[in-house]
Image 1: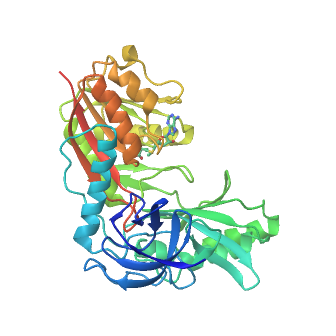
Image 2 (image 1 turned 135 degrees about the vertical axis):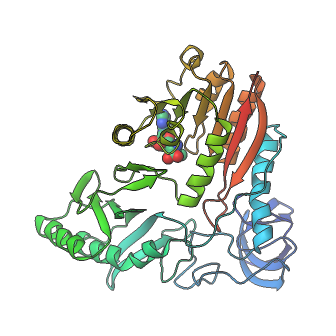
Length: 417
Ligand SMILES: C[S@@+](CC[C@H](N)C(=O)[O-])C[C@H]1O[C@@H](n2cnc3c(N)ncnc32)[C@H](O)[C@@H]1O
């Protein structure tokens, strides 16, 4: 493969530098607009070989595992550690603006709500048993290589400090050389650890893991697949004065700061509402906060998450009525007649968005809607559906939750009448 030279024109939505070639755009990770690079290219994907001209916006990466020459390999966790802070914040806001524009939406977009290092309380680690012991870290982009993590400026210090405990547990529980995953959430009472993709361990290994959990400080619960192996203390999250007992490996916003920023925006736009539907509610990140002032109906597909929400609402004094409904909102979105009692709706779907629900909302008379999204493209599509149904898109606020990755979240305020 012959080396080629390119000048980077812009950053793409995945954080790669993009250059033009006779065959179309070429995507070159870890490069910045204006930089001149030599690359090895395979079709539209290229790897930087050398940096000939450097952007004034380039900064030293925060961590030794970042970039094409990262220690132990290229960590797939971050794609934008090399971009100066104000340009990084502006890039994320622009990703949202561009995605909305693709769907014909031109509305006020606020500055990015920034994130910082040391905030990620939830992470999914890749692991494998090797001849040298347990390898644990993050996967390289588009490969099965696992980068053993020796530092991580993104994770909370507490979560990072527990990596040796995760390795210890993996060493006890994993006997084969097959890759496995560990999802971890830092709760207020300790780590909630869920192993997946491992064979059921022998009784001897299970007992050894239980002893290790009881000895190592700071672990609230250990789960393998669907089975809780040991839970020395209830894994618990405190949210605005309410205590939630999240189900193992359930959805939780990845940082507390982003969760609070999103919730504050939801409460702001739905202030004064009397009856609110929280669609794709999870365990009640928004519902439980909204219920301080409004009656809330929470709808969600995940039964254990709804059970946690229900229990939290019952145990908390002073909330308005909270009802829950288990329902697949892709197949059975709430219909306009079901939406009629509500004067406010918040919806926060997975990355695929909420096309079917947006179509029903577009036919409803709900006066205020908040759309929360982890995918600007599907948000743009859903907002276009609501706009075509007569909603005004008052404002979109981009939020950084995945520090130094290309992911960006957004909260949109809509109204009618
Ligand atoms: C981005 S999370 C938001 C959860 C919650 N709003 C929060 O902030 O914690 C998306 C939620 O949608 C739920 N979900 C996914 N597919 C669904 C479906 N087809 N119908 C209903 N809920 C679904 C997931 O279980 C998850 O709880």
